[in-house]
Image 1: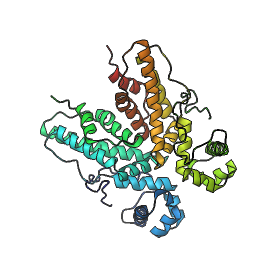
Image 2: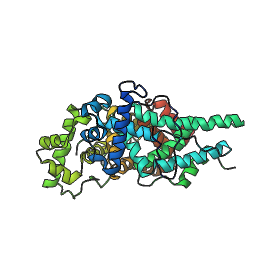
Image 3: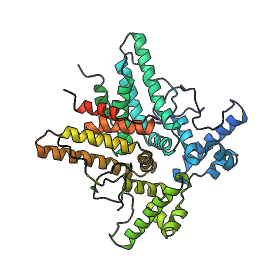
Length: 206
Length: 206
């Protein structure tokens, strides 16, 4: 599993979900031929992605780069958009827990600012688009699951400190969702000030 | 311009934005050859869309159906995803104003419930995905613009009645955005009860 930075200056968390391959039709034996093929194909997509514009990448190209046949890719992923979505989910998979700032409010503010920065970066936006471009429902759910996991971690840490946890659904609906909507549908990317205002609704200034 | 229902039971509004063709590289003379080509290509996409799964549609197929050369399509739209996004924007373009229920709160509640129903329908979701799949920024902005236009219409009508308008940005961030986020990223589609709860934040029950 690669370590990926959506935004070069900031890293995303640790692997958390048990289900790695949301669209992989067959179960992968770790270390087996199937796992090696998956790794080779994912690596090929990332390599081609770095050197081509997205609409130039084809299944035959990926197959050639990965040393497999195109039919192997079609059999396993169904089509190109499902493969690209699968690679995007892997790249969005957290590689570290949210920063521990010592308080739940601090943790949430730090996480949201980093989340907005990463998701609205050109790479983050491209990965979100890949995740959404497939008709399979698994990848968008996995992507949203990573965010829920982070919020749960912040809440668990807060409980251990004796702090009151926040309502995760409220943070999703009124902090995460507006950031994602503005990132996807407007030319103005969410600023740090905008993120602070959204979190102010959860933690009003006293 | 076609009249399209995202959800068969409900219709979306009237043409409102002046800019019709967000990605068309050349200006279209109404009634001219350029406009006829655009219409033929859009019609071809819609026809093929009805009979094929999305990943089977190709530019040569669309060109053959529309009676133009593939290079005409590439010259005008750049690539397939930009063309599909352009067609999706046209299909999402409103064909009627939001219902006038006699009060701003009623108008907003009716509009939001209809919006959620249409956007979370299989057709609405597919169109949103097409709009987001292109790297051009124009189509997602046009799509969000339609929603803003509707909210502006509701506000203008309220002002004429002597009612206090709502803050459009607040409705976008805390009512529209959660609906779109849950539609795109979760398997659970927004229910009417969920929409009502979101609007309750703008119009608390007294």
